[in-house]
Image (cartoon, rainbow, N blue to C red; front, side, top):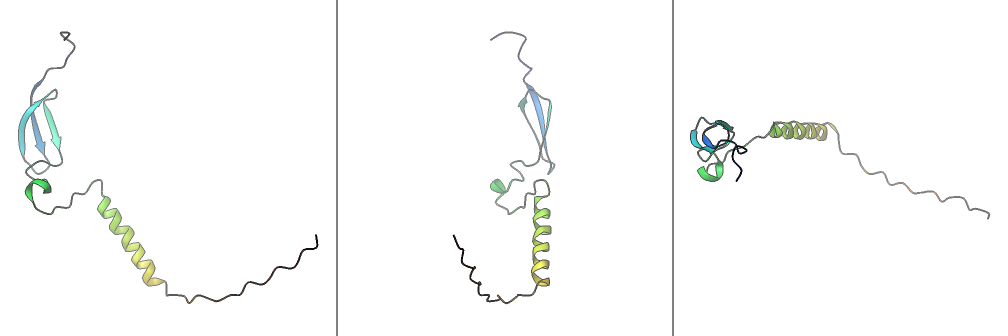
Length: 91
């Protein structure tokens, strides 16, 4: 390995959004995580809704609009129309 071209590999403090902190090693001194082993549903066994970028709220708004539109629009009976024959061509 060449000397002087690699970054320093030092102790790093990782802070989760739940408040849990732990130390590991990295090239940066501080990291911020959204989920960790203390709050991740896979490790805790608890059902937790993980919202990424407001996607759940967006889905709920769209679903509410669709329900409102369905309630507002009454069911229309299908009109039975007979297609008229086209006039014969003289070619």
